[in-house]
Length: 144
Figure 1 (cartoon, rainbow, N blue to C red):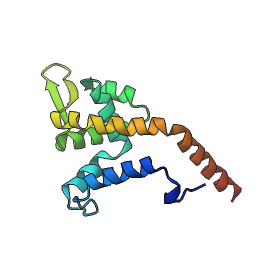
Figure 2: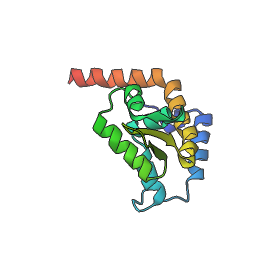
Figure 3: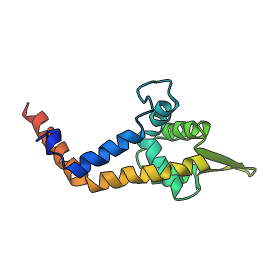
């Protein structure tokens, strides 16, 4: 059952208001805004999982592919390239035969680890509620 805003605890409302006040001056709906573009690049499941994996340390492509279950080779390559092009990930190629390539977060990438951790922590803290909601929605869909 949906809650009305007036039924949401005051502390939760206050936290949301404080968070919104920090980004009030950013035009997040403007597609030309650098912040809008950064969030668009970073807010996808594979990117977030790659950040978490690389926050644990430098990794080779094959290690990332084993750790991130379900990512296709094409998607892993595309996401790594995009993160490298945007300055979040660094790729180091070693002059060996066969060539060895390692990926690691740049300083900019490391600065995004804390928000990623907060997002995953929030998801963990709300997992039971999220599961209940998904189950309720799935039951409604079947009943139709």
